[in-house]
Image 1 (cartoon, helix red, strand yellow):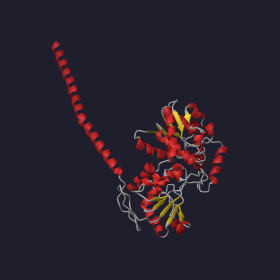
Image 2 (cartoon, rainbow, N blue to C red):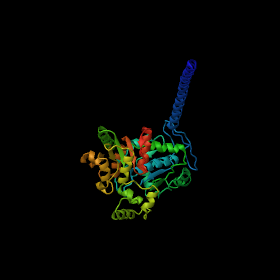
Image 3 (cartoon, rainbow, N blue to C red):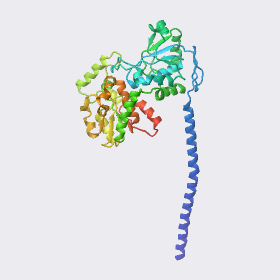
Image 4 (tube, helix red, strand yellow):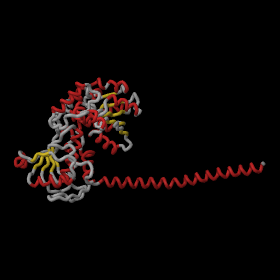
Length: 411
């Protein structure tokens, strides 16, 4: 009996030794495997960085079109004409449009005149390009790609400036449209003015080199002016001194609700007011809109009350700072009551800065939006309540700056 116990004990010890040996072998095997994976990851990352480092371009057309490859030296080309663009929409819609128009000018070998910003739509912002963006940096940072000038030369203005071809390009157009339909116009007219620029270049299905140039414009060339950057960074510093913060792009604003037709949470009187606003702007094509249909398609911003529920579901702590990166909320403070009760540390730029500091930005909605943009890109968590232009642009910048950045999409 004792001998049987001894035999079993020896077998158990042998089994345990076998497991230990096997685990040791696995550990020894894991080390080179992990090292190989790490090396390959580094190589892939280096290759990816090299791929993104250059901007190559090959294009053919019936008129003079560039066939050179981007280099560190300025690109010499004979201009096919002058492109003027009149951007429409809010700050971030215009920003996206500028990226597209620079790309079009590069594609067609045109001289681009510094874009004009929207002054006549709902926002009625009188700001010029140089009031928001560093125009010198914009021109210099793109000089290797496209020639950009502040205004038309006098001799051209005298010859063609009074009667330029004014037209809106077709929305979501490919490079073929611009090469085949737009480029020939410059052989007859020296100046063409695009009077609508929103979504006039396709997002997908265009050459990678054009996509790269779009990114270069958005992430490098479009730099805010010093006064905007300075005040934006002051806001960031004030928030960071108090701890981490969420930037909440709460898109429950009058223009958004009016033009989208989304009236969830509004009274009948408010819904009628928003409808009348749509009719007040002839350029807005869609007049009669059914709010419930829009919501069912996911095309409406969340209400402040819905946003409150989702922030709580995401685990955002009650004492977390929440910076409202938006304009005036429709319904004012009354609509923020639920959100403020759940998260008492809600702040806005108007609460953090002295009135004198914001005085220069009053009645300049695009400059105010630029301040929110600076704060949003420095936040610990960015939460947009609508998948609009600002959401996409901030996401793009933060993915480049901080690959592990937390962006919570609430739709």
